[in-house]
Length: 47
Length: 527
Image (cartoon, rainbow over all chains, first blue to last red):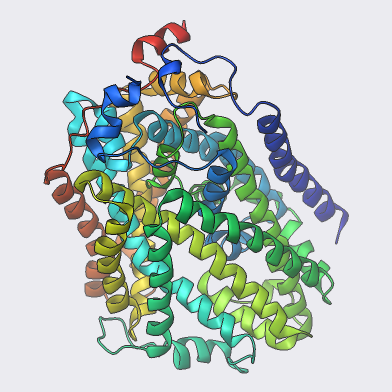
């Protein structure tokens, strides 16, 4: 592989796979809100 | 009394509690299983290569962020706030004055009906090729085997001559998919995805690692990732990027609306959507590496350049080029089993999601259970699928219907939904506030701008351009009478189906519903 091809592969990997890892970490750290709008006590939260 | 009970959610549309995913990750895996389909494996690599190679990744990522993710948010917001199948959700979104918006939901459902009947046939082909891989049944002339011996392809038309080699696996695919659908969301769709998606990823990763050690693999990757920057000034490359993102993410034809309607009211909506979108693109990059490493080997074996290879995308890539490669490589049968096994799993989970749109809509409208929908509606669709796509004209019909259903049907539905939701019914602020009221990743005016202006503008350009090409040039040299029936006729069926289904009576009143959070609460939150 040429240098430019390797560079573009790395950029793609960092942005796309990095985006996936970042979004998983973001979701795992804060899976849901602490406070919900009014009426939240009346709806199911079994998810 | 809970809001759900007050709203009639438990008592009106389905006379029972709406089914739910068993958890956040069950939903995410199912949504990824829907998005990751045949297009990720056989479309993305070729499209990227033909549209600038490494440089294509620039418009691709821009399209992901400016259109793919925003429309995915829109679908999730509609399904989650209005908690119903596509027709139910759009009817509720339209309110008293906009009950007719239900027809847009049915338009999406009919797109799914059309797609399901031919997509099942492709899954059946892949299942057949999975078994053919054991003894490399296709021989040396893979094109002749696929179109001749296997499909027994005749001239364009509507044949009544069945091909048993397609009919039998097609029936089996329908039996399997309807059995899963009839088991419901958590025990059926989610369970299938939880099993098949990890298997798919593992199988495909083994395939990619094997491909990387083949002679010529690096030449293939060089061809895929070397950028042609001049392509960036070509509008068609940008359209190709937006098209790839759009068709790949399963957006704008009801799937994501339906899937998000099965989430709990307090479920985080946007953050899982980011995981789904990036997971889909991540798989596309992996597929690109696997496919082009393999094509590099093929070119090396033939003593030609990658640019001289033919059939590097779509059905031909999978059923003509790949079998030829498998025949030439050491340990070919194992490679073939992995490749076609991956196609079956990717296709099956996507087919499930397409059919769930249909099943959910019929359950809501007629107050029937998942099992009843699976038997009554599913068997009818299976019959049509077998009649049209297991005959000697099946592949031509499939190719034509696919072209119109995707490029006219789905793109048209996307334009209609973005314009109607954002501009006609002005639901952008309410949906943005809804997303923010339950989600950890917040959206603002920029999201509304992307969904309301950029997305419909790009999609409208795509639609007009495609219509002009199809009207002036036809398609694949097929006779005009045939394109009128199988192509434009498909759109007519979708439109007539949408109008007819909208006109039918509901078993239970879908309008007896109160969204949560209330509009008033959302307004206060937005201040």
